[in-house]
Structure formats: C-alpha cells, structure tokens
Image (cartoon, rainbow over all chains, first blue to last red; front, top):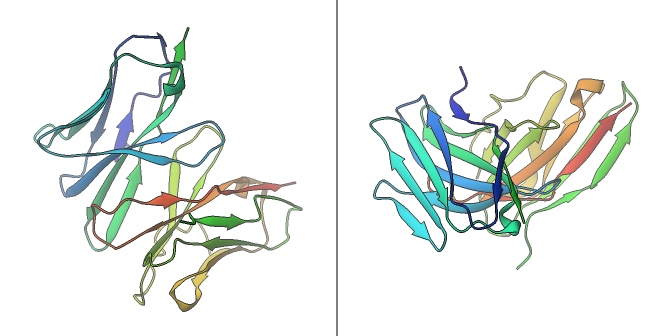
Length: 111
Length: 115
C-alpha cells in the first residue's frame, strides 16, 4: 500500500460543477499537508497548504482530518482552466524530512 | 524574482552513456530536492540537500545515481551507464528552509530519454 493514496480519476465534470478529491495517508507522524496542481508537461505548483482548521482560497477549500488521516480538496464552480492533475503531498520528519507525493487525480472540466 | 532553473530542458542519450543534469535553486533557498516523474506517474523522491548537512540519499534507485551540491547552491544529478528505465522527467525543487511547512518551488524539469 502506498503511503499517500489518491483516486487517479479521471474526473470529467461540466463547467460550474463542484468536484471533490480525497487523499489518505498512512503515516500518523505526518506533519504538513499540501495540494499541488500540475498541468500537462509542466512542473507542479503549490495550490494550497492544508491546515487542521480547514482553509479556503476563493473557489478552493481544503480540509484535514488527522484522526482519519484524510485530506480533501473541494473545487466549486469549476472552470475550464481548472483542468489539471491535483497532487496530494504529505511531509513528515521521522529520521529526516520526507516529502511524499500522491500519484495525482486527473480533472477534466468541459464546456 | 528568478525561479528554479534546470538544464538541459531535454536530453536524449544512448543506453550506457553518462548524463549530468543541472539545477539552479532560488537564491537564498537552503533546501534542494531532486525527484523524477515517469510518464503518467507521481513524483518519486531521489535526494535532498539541506544547507551543509549530509544529504538524504534514501531515494536514489541505484548506485548509478549520484548528486552533489556545490557551495550550497547549484546541484548536479549524475546518472552513470544510463538504462532505458531511467527515461523520465527529472524535477528539481528548492525551499527556503527545512521545516515541514515550507513550500517547495519546482523547476521546469529535464526530460531524459534513453534510447
């Protein structure tokens, strides 16, 4: 089992839809959590950090549930430009800092 | 300001040849990471440098892979006797510090093709 698991998708949604991505992690020592976005043939870029209290940035909302070791990303009012792969990222410090990337969830938003 | 830069952007090499990939991190960033990403796959951690500390090499897949970071800035990833399974995009990232919450900024990657 991978340390960080995501539904690979793809998710195909119409413009304006709300879509939710889930991510689970297996190491309870994980300390920091992020969602990155990666466009086709481009490098990953930070979308948002994920805090225990939950955080929102415009149409994007991230949630963390430490008890269930679960992270989510909600995108409201999807735009065509949201089409990308969304990577769940977990960092921990167990004998050194480790950054573990999920394999990503592919999103296609269609007109 | 300038972001992370990598060179070359593309590299095609014959099986058995050695290759060197270069990464220039963001100025002032003390942490530097190398990852590779095979087609349709997630990022695989390779190696991590933090300041003057010994690097974390735990992700290097074999002894054909090595990396160095000179003067706490530029890093070179070397792959000796390349194999076809080494074909991937090699991504470098840097961050301001070593804390868990620091954002990693990625370079555009080097696409390596081994024929």
